[in-house]
Image (cartoon, rainbow, N blue to C red):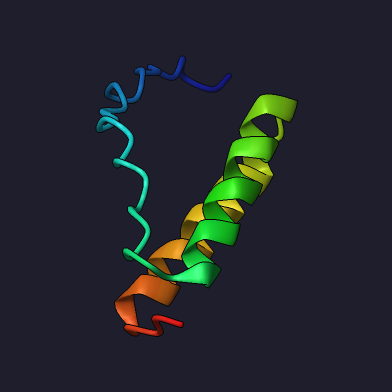
Length: 67
């Protein structure tokens, strides 16, 4: 007969607070469009699209592509 096994629980998961959404560059038409899309997505409850807009906005602002 096999011996009984002892099981233990994994330690708790520690999550940080969500990051603040990226801020648009002043005077950038692309940033304004992304913020508008993000706002519409949030109002529609589409948090996946909100996240996509945040990623695009952060990447766009990082490269300094002000148009």
